[in-house]
Each structure stands twice: as structure tokens, then as C-alpha cells.
Amino acid sequence: MAWQRRSQWLEWHCHPLIVLARVCGGCLSGQTRGVEVLVTGGTGRLGQRLSAPLQAAGHTVKLMSRRGAGPGGVRADLATGHDLARVVGGAEIVLHAASDARGDFWQCDVAGTRRLVEAVDRDRLRHLVYVSIVGVDRIPFGYYHAKFAAEQVLLASGLPVTLLRVTQFHDFIDDLLSTARRGPVLPVPMGWRVQPVDVGEVAGHVTEVVGRAPSGGVIEYGGPEELVAADLARAWATAKEPSAHVVATPIPGKLSATLRDGAALPTSGARGRRTYAEHLGG
Image 1 (cartoon, one colour):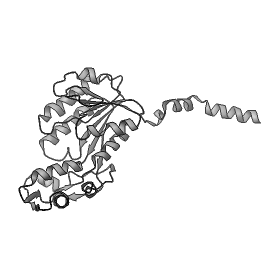
Image 2 (cartoon, rainbow, N blue to C red):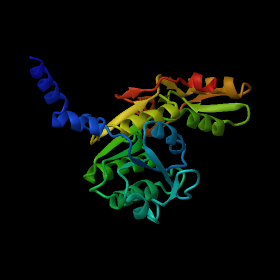
Image 3 (cartoon, rainbow, N blue to C red):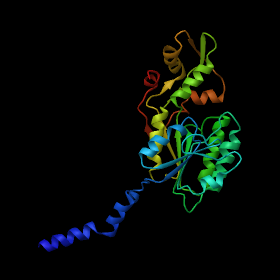
Image 4 (tube, helix red, strand yellow):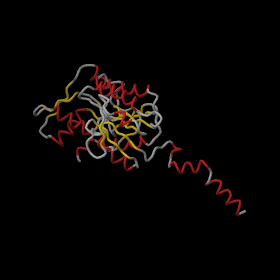
């Protein structure tokens, strides 16, 4: 009977599917490991945080930006298309994090995404992950309209895509509050509801998403707690500007109404763990 047990052992361990699973290192489960990842917006708030977790996952990382600065940096411009085909053409994984909220976002975010779709090698590309914002389909704001339009470009492209909508980063909230301060007064919109998230945790989650099979649609990721703008402002003022007096101000209009109604809050998906208070505490 020993020879039968040995025969069964060999049949199991040498079965072509078992061997293939071991060689692929998880490819049968839909995971992608150890490939070259091209990151657009490589010098942005999120882009510059992506190298470490992606490399820790075994990937080779190229950070694309208009300047191509820093280690692993490559230069190409979504807004003009300059050098885009050369940089993007060989990519197996594209992590599209480029955006231009303060400039011509229709040119960068929408037309630039269309240029990106045209530049990729469809026979080579395995996954394109687009970093978007929770609420782009509900909040009446020009920049959000552009992000939503870029999502539609990707959904219509026929490429293997995942649209990852995330909430506002903690340090972005810091910047907004610092800019809003007027002398001793810190005015904030009354009743606006948000769920900010740690950018480092977003980078880690993005790395997980890159390693999965494309969803073909939208997934969400947000912070661990819902807060109103006045509570955020008071916490920020206590930690950063104790002399600032927070004033919650009613803001009329459709934009304000949607934010009071929770349009910026995620409705599904995973959540980060680091709170805004923990962020302020360093």
C-alpha cells in the first residue's frame, strides 16, 4: 500500500494546477504580486507615500510626474501628453493618482485620463486603479464633476479598472482650517459632515487594491469616524492654534445642503483606524 500512498502524493503535489498555483504565487486567487507599478501623480500628497508600501509588497515602483523628481521618478505630462506613451506603454499596473484641483482639472483629470487610456498597452495592462473621492457622484462642485467624468472615461474604456473613492486626508483638513482662519476667528460651515482618513493608511489600502483582481467598478475607503466641521475645527484649534475661536456659520445653497446630508461620507468599503485626534497628537 505504500506505493499507492506515494502515487497519490505525487498525483496531488505534481498536479498541473497545483504546480501552476505555486509558480504564480497567488495568481489563481486573483492576486498580483511583484510587478512594475507606474504611479501617476507621484509627487502628490498620496503619490509620494506609495513607494514604501508598494515596494514592501514586492513591486517595482515608478513615480510619474511633470517634473520626474526624486528616486524612481519618471517624467511625463497628462495635461499635454508629452512623453506619456513612452512612460506608460510598458506598464502592467497603473495607479492613477494624478490630479490638479487648483488648476485646469478638466484638462488634467478628464482629458489627461483619456490620454492615459490611449497610452496604455491593452495587451500588457493587468490593472488600472484610479484614486477618486467619495461623493463625486453626489456633490455639486466643479472639481468633483471632473473627477466623476474621469471615472466615466475609465469605465467606458474597456480596461481592467478599479475606481477607489477615498475621503479627505487628515493633513488636507489641516490645510483647509489653517487657510480659513481670519485672525482670532476660525469660521467653518455649520453641519458639514466628513469622515477624514490618514493618508498613510490610504497608501496601504491602495497597495492591497493593486494586488487584487480589478473590480470593474467603484469601491470606497474612509476614516474611522464621522465628524462635523465644527468639531474638527475645535480639535485642530486646541492642538495648533489655542487662541482661535471657532464659529460655525450657516452656509446656504445646494452644495452645503448635500454636505450636511452626508454626501461626503462613505456608504460601504473598508475603514482606516487612525482618528483625526490621533493625527493631531502626532
